Amino acid sequence: MERRRYLIKFYYIGSGRYFGSQRQIEYETIENYLIGSLLKKKYIEDIKTSGFEVASRTDKFVSARGACFSFLTNKALTLMEINSMLPRDIGLWAFCEVKENFSSRFNAIYRFYKYIFLVPEKKEGSYPYNLKLMKEACKILEGHHDFLNFSKREKKSIKTTRDMLLSDFEKDGKFLIFNFKSQAFLRQQIRRMVAKLLEVGKEVIDLEDFIQLFDTNEYISYQPADPEGLILWDIYYGENVHFTIDVKSYERMLQYFSKKFYTYNLKQKLFEILQHDDIS
Image 1 (cartoon, rainbow, N blue to C red):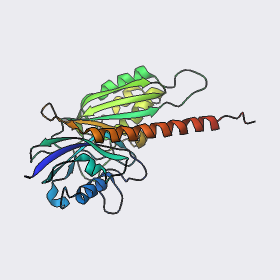
Image 2: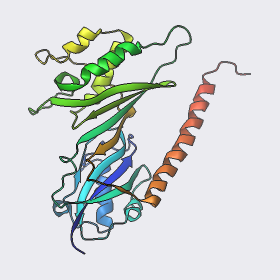
Image 3: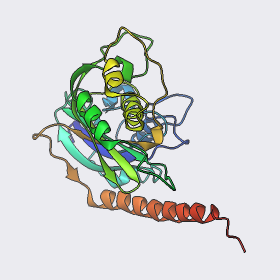
Image 4: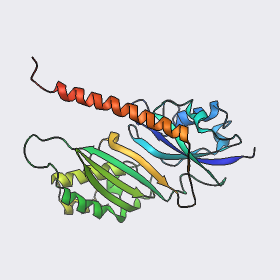
């Protein structure tokens, strides 16, 4: 079989088990598991000649549903064969054959992230966030801006201007679900944008203070939002890239999600009951 490049969609659940997605020698990471599975099932012989490339890198505790990577192989592709070597919190579920020089990283048209925020409950009083102000702040983020003050400072000099295609959120019960689309994001950019949007909602800062963050002459240091709320939802490559969903792999993913949903709902109810004082 001639050598072919495949673009793969995969999911993973961020946890303390993984030190982010990017491969590291001394720590367990998402990439380490992917590469190990490809090697064990003889899809690649070594990393140097495999053309292995992940489209996006995420920090520790960040999850993904539609992350992508690509690689070259001489072997016919069977996703479940690779999945059999992966832990259940990582899984491949769709694929597409692409040109040999295709870059899963640089050919991406946009990356789509969601951020889930659980609004703290208040026993009395009004809703704790001014959603109207937050909507206005979201729209301010859209367009071409320098996001230096919305990112983690890097040791090396990098370009910090980005085009934000979408910035919004919706209220879903106890949660606020933020949506962000851009061709590329800076490190911690989404978590820092969310942190400042929440400050606007709490009226800790006003819209003028928020706009001032685009002034890169002044360095502003602050904590980003919790990484556990962040999900790499999808990566879009245009109309010419058509993914085929592998049925068994997709079912494997949904079964895992369903099992975890049940477990965590049970735990949530348990801790809700444990907070009550009416022990008899």
